[in-house]
Every structure is written in structure tokens, then in C-alpha cells.
Image (cartoon, rainbow, N blue to C red):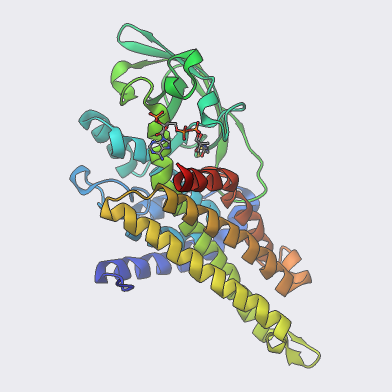
Length: 377
Ligand code: COS
């Protein structure tokens, strides 16, 4: 077992760490307040090569392994989970094409992402969250085209993406066996962006409703076969969930470092509060949980990179890391006391941002189901 990273991974980790310290962390509170990632930051993220992390080398991408990508998301998570989420949504949206896309689909999708554009993965609907098979959006074949109708909700990058992966039902009564994945361009007639969500956390990221009204797309935009959409979605989520874990680890680490610094500086009863054992126990628990979460994320990515099954480990990594981020950030607010609750410090932002980690890309209840299914069946 080798716990060392390669020189390339270390270089890249340093590059992203420096980028985050300079370009993201100092602006995180402002972006959270404004609820937007400024366009000049997009440009810089693109120039730094942080938008197309999952694009293979043969399609002009960086061709990174999953572990390297996780290291990058961990660093981005330290700076701002909202920014990290926006870039990670590109990875999520790219995987259906990475995994099952045709040559032509790969060229199309990856060139859009390589050009610094955003993508969105649209599975969720008002009536289909955890129950992904309940998708009500329909895709009806008409000659060489499909006509899509329906509404998607809570779609990360929904309002700002150029290209979308839309899951629709090609056989209405078939449940998960009717689900099919399609590529839809933003400018397709009938496609529009609905309301933008006003969120508790990851406020810099964009979350929107999508409306499809007789959206006509060529058959070539279907990914895989009709009815293969559920498996494509599940495989995509397997691949992407460790990155939610990585962002959670980064977010928890940043919050933890804030608590350590504060505990050393804050004087009460004539001593730094770090000298009190009840505070020390909280910091020690945080350190343990973050370290365990980090190792689980790296292990899931390592398994993926070995080409062996990793669905259970992916769910374990996401679930444990997200729960860790939540628990750690709640305790960080506690260590900072009134200052933790104030918007003057970033502790409360970390706590708000952490909550979504337990909800998106499959709730942590769903992760436990996936883990149990892998253990039992
Ligand atoms: N990889 C490949 N195939 C998979 C798979 C995976 N990880 N998970 C399931 N499948 C396949 C199964 O093999 C099965 O195929 P067959 O019928 O051919 O044997 C099929 O999919 C159905 O599997 P299963 O019976 O386990 O599915 P369930 O209906 O019980 O649902 C859960 C499984 C609940 C785990 C699934 O609906 C899920 O993950 N929901 C959460 C969705 C989600 O994360 N939403 C968040 C929004 S997207 S950001």
C-alpha cells in the first residue's frame, strides 16, 4: 500500500491550492452573499484547467485519473463549496458521455466543456428525487427525432450551462426501464430555464428549474439505448459521488483549520480556549473524522482507477464524508461560539454549505441503501 502521491499529483495539488488561496477563498463570503460566481472567475478557472477535469486526453482534456480529480475537488472545497459544486457539475454531466457516449457525442460534449463552458446533469424532477425511476419527462420518437416534454428541478448549473444531459422516459409505464439519456443544447427551441432556487448554502452555485416544451432533438443525441438511462445514471453517480466526498473533506478541513486557529487565539479565563480539554476533544474528533473521510474518498477513487467494482465504496465515501462535513462544521460553529454564528466569520457559511453534501447526488439515506444492497444481495 502506497500513501504517496505522484510528483504530478503533488504539483497539481499545489497549483490548485495556490489558485484557491488567491482567487477563490478571499471572495467566498462575497460570492455567497451575492449568490453568483463572477464571470472573471470562470475565465480564470477555465485558464487553470479546472472546468474539464474528466475529459480524456484523446479529446484534448487532461486525462486525469479519479484520485487526481478528487485531490483537485478537495482543494476547491476548501475555498468555496459553491464554486467547487459548479465545477463538479461539469464532471457529473460529462460522465454519461465518458461512460457510454458515441464517438460523435464525445467530440461534441467535450469540445463544449474544453471551451470553458458549463454542463448540467438533469435527472431530478418535482416528483422524482430519490425515486429516480419516477421521471415524468417524456421523450417520444418521431422519425429521426425525439420530442421531449417535462420539467426538471434543482439542476446545478441549470441556468448557466451550454449543454445538458436530460433523462426522460421513452416508455411511460416502464419505470426505471423506460429511462433514457439525451444530450440537449441550450439553444434548442422549446428549451427554457425556469426559476432559480434561493438556497441555504452553496449559494455561489446556480440551481435552476428546466422546462422542456416540445423540444425536438435528433436521434443521434440519445446516449446508449432506449431504457438504458437508469443504469447510465447509476454508473454516473457511482463515478461522481467520491467527488462530493472530496469537496466535503476540503470544506471540513477548512472549517477545522479555522477552529484550531480561533481556539489558539481566543482567551477566556486568562487562557486560550485550546487549553481546555473539552475544546481539545472536539478538535481531536474533527481531526479523526476528517482523516477517515479523506482516506475513504481516496480509496473509492483508487478502486475506480484500478477498474474494479467500487459502487459500495463510492457510496461509503460520499456518505461518510458528507456526514463528517456536517458534524465538523456544526462543531466549528460551537468552538467559535457567538462569532461562529455571526456572518463576520466563515464558520456559518461552512455549516450551511455542508448540509447539501448530505442531500445531493443521492441523499445519505440513499447511500446507506446502496451500501446495504451491496452487502446483502
Ligand atoms: N451500476 C450499474 N447498474 C446499476 C447500478 C449501478 N451502480 N445500480 C443499479 N443498477 C441496475 C441494477 O443492476 C438493476 O438492473 P437489472 O434490473 O438489469 O438487474 C437496475 O439498475 C435496478 O437496480 P435496483 O433494483 O437496485 O434499483 P432500485 O429501483 O432499487 O433503486 C436506488 C436503487 C434507490 C439506489 C436508486 O434509485 C438511486 O440511486 N436513487 C437516487 C438517485 C439520486 O441519486 N438522485 C440524486 C439526483 S441526481 S444529482
